[in-house]
Length: 245
Image (cartoon, rainbow, N blue to C red; front, side, top):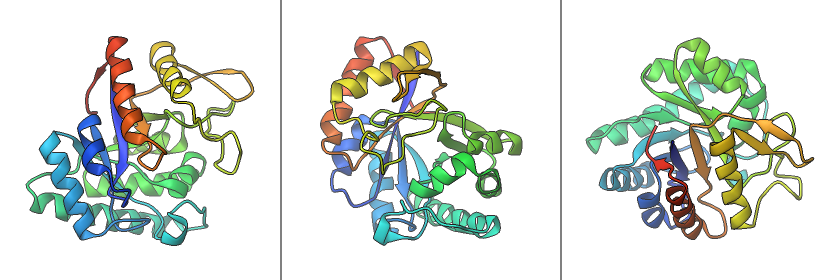
């Protein structure tokens, strides 16, 4: 068995240099919810140094809410927004002698594309137009992955180590008290269950079938470096190889 470990970086958290050696794919903020040319360049150079796959992490340009506030957006405007942010990171990557390999939307844009087919289709179209070889990363079982497959993109099913799930396979909204898993041991057990058994236990106790290609480690968690290190150790002990998409 093998799995990709991805993390959202270039967001100003201050520990990109310690997280990068522990992951296999970096989702780099590209000027929407966070990031600028300098932060993108720093993250790209770190990824190159550690052999980590570079990905664009486009989000709503709503820095006050870190791109986590849902908003109505016309699909054409969403496609332009995503295309512009992918292009911004692509230009930086090319200047550094690298290329983008995947795209993963951020925050509210990601969550809305899980369930809104028109928005998902717009994002998939923007990714295809940028480069048909890009991998589109989205929540397992979501509209975003459906749209990516229809468009002809390679897609990757993502799960979250530190988020709880509902019985329909969706993430528990962050507004709920039980949205986050704060116990590292419980988070690791959830990851191992998903990879090993293809199931995740929802908050109501239901076991939900879920596919997985990549596991997200949140870079803005309380102890992300320590958690990433422990997760890699536990994956290795279970005979699970960690490698990029």
